[in-house]
Length: 427
Length: 67
Ligand SMILES: Cc1cc2nc3c(=O)[nH]c(=O)nc-3n(C[C@H](O)[C@H](O)[C@H](O)COP(=O)(O)O)c2cc1C
Image 1 (cartoon, rainbow over the protein chains, first blue to last red):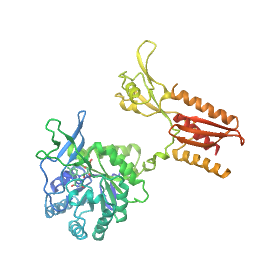
Image 2: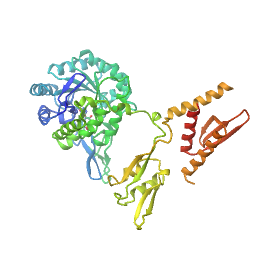
Image 3: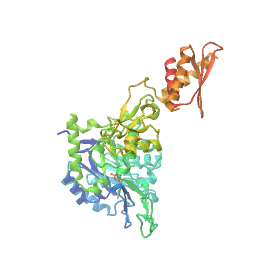
Image 4: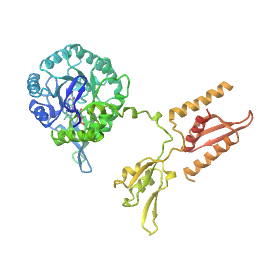
């Protein structure tokens, strides 16, 4: 059995799977059941001045029969008084001293408001704080959540105020509703954050009912933008984690959030620089017990690879995440169709013929049976045919031996630039 | 003619000039592709218009090798 325990900026937990601040962590009853099921930590549903929610709050995108491919909500932070939450946090921590409880906080951007709430939650024994600078709806209209999380100066200042008072590690939770998340991540570092977490939800409108013309969801015939999460956002979240992990000015741990639905997703986030992951939608879709599969899958993976501790995964793929200008232009892959596996559905031919490079021919074999074949010299290796192919193993993308030495765009431009300089010098 | 055939022709032309002792002295890239200026002696100049992406890669490799 591999060591699954993590230590994120001083917050220890028996495994890297935390519940994200959201409905699953709304109460002591829920968090205690989650810990019993195996979750290593929980970020409590965001605490602040209790709010009023609308009825009808969630919507989901089903895609070709796959339910909850994406999830949308217009829910706000906790609607329960602080004292009630604090009492339940205290009781939960007492029952589960080795599990991580992080208090998610959101107040107006004023120093005394942050000081007040930090003192109160730390008094009941939380292991850390997470500042919610990300909620995109409702709270943002009141100057909190994403509204302050989109302004680097406000991120820095509020983090600084929290750090003035905090005794426990401070995680800053970032909004993805910004062009470059490293700007706010750097601001968090400047403010003294001990860690960052990302992503909160992405501005979204789940749909419009084409019969009633109502938004989905709607509240008495009206809608408002919500926050998007679930499997559909994973690539966006992973990119943002990777961008922060490879930025040398962001040298604090990352808690990865966004579409994590299984142990494989968790490993991806950790390889891309996250010390641990947080999960919301997958727990809402399948219940707390999905963590059993996550723990078992992660443990088996580590054992099979002979890796003693989950921490040995953290950041191992970051150096492979680079800029386009540093990619080798002379690297070449081509598609190869395995005719004994191919079912001749022609999807690859259609995709290539209509939307790519017209290099998959429909031919007949010696016995007159239809076969598909790639003209490799015309194939640019775009991967489209293998993406649309419905049969595993029917199309391989194979590496061709390098005809030329590796050459990146940046190297090419430098060489061409040097040419111009050489001419100038001769002149 | 396929892009590949066109590339092979462009590559042959570039190789031919190198065999004759020319070197690339200037490259102008614009909306029409790349104009590659070759020079051997003071007055011996040639220009190739390279249209294909593979061709643009190829002359870049040659420039790096020649530098
Ligand atoms: C219904 C709902 C309520 C949420 N409430 C909060 C919240 O109070 N505080 C917070 O920081 N994030 C909140 N989130 C965002 C999640 O914590 C998480 O960042 C996001 O859902 C992405 O993770 P996922 O793809 O695993 O769901 C909420 C998400 C959902 C779906």
